[in-house]
Image 1: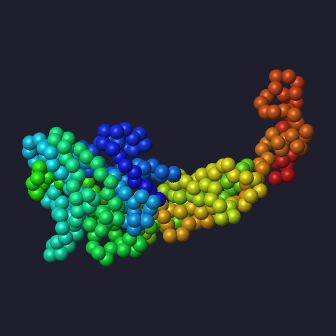
Image 2: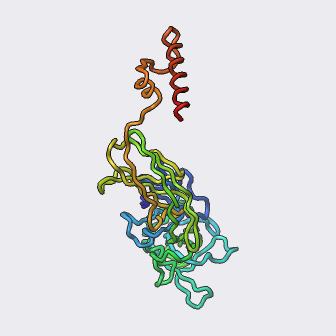
Image 3: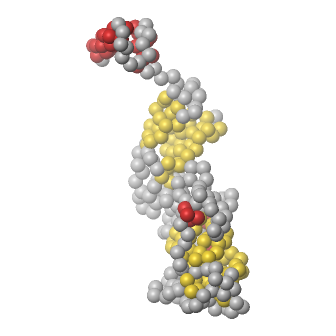
Amino acid sequence: MRRALLLVVLVAAPALATAQTPPGEGEVKYGSDQGPGELVIDDAFINIDECNGSVTAPLLELLWNTKLASGSQESGNFKIYVANDAGAPTADPKYCKTEDDPNASPKIYAGQVGSDTYTANANQDTGSAEVSTRSIMLAGTEDAFDCNDASLQDRTLTVCVHYIPGSGSSPTGSAVGTLTLSVRRPPAPPWLTVGEGEDALNLSWGEPTATGTQARATSYRVVVSSGGTEFFRDDVTARELRVGGLSNGTPYDVAVYGLSAAMNESTDPMTGSGTPGPVLDFWEYYSQQLGGKEEGGCGTGGAGPLALLAISALLAGLRRRA
């Protein structure tokens, strides 16, 4: 699950790409914390958990840089609106619809989110605000939208920050961004292999194929547990992983979920199990079989050539037994 945290304008936040790349004129950007196993930094999605408001802190941080119709910015207010309509394509600056229009075709769903007003200071056209992800969903969708219906198509929601000068009521500047509301789930990997290593498990799995209304898996969530206790959890883009730091002789359960670009998990994981154990490498085997005392490499004295001859003999014996 992702968790969006506060961004403060002009305050450094090295872990956040949005802090390093501020929004351009007329643009809204979104920032999210890079939590444990997190793959994305710029947060362009509202996923199932954020749609439901069920994550620990379902807040999205908006950063904006308003574009004015003319002149310079005075003291005033910012207001934030969300709509399922992108507005007039040639408008500059662009303004969102501020309320539902059931007579439009298709119907327009729109509304204000966040605080009633955010202070706009003279000659400072940037700002930031934390906004509930669920309130964004509610403003830009129909009342019957079901966050748990994985068959629903992705929705593009337009977020507009309107600049309203002084005590006026009409905007004279704006910043615009888009979010994708995505509740589709990807499939789980079609297979999983668990190789047993020294204090480790070596995992690999197949690439899922999305069908019907499923989302494509763009990454994977790996969970390793034993006796109901979770020992490892991480999100990865590769399809193989070595999980170390485990205990030899202890059986572990492995679950690998598919993850969509919006970080929605597959309904079920692909599962497997394995027990780490001691691994006999070549030198250990050589030592056991021939009583060898070499520690690797080629010696310069008589022991080195003798060891190499012994190894050759050992390999020949192994080939004859194969």
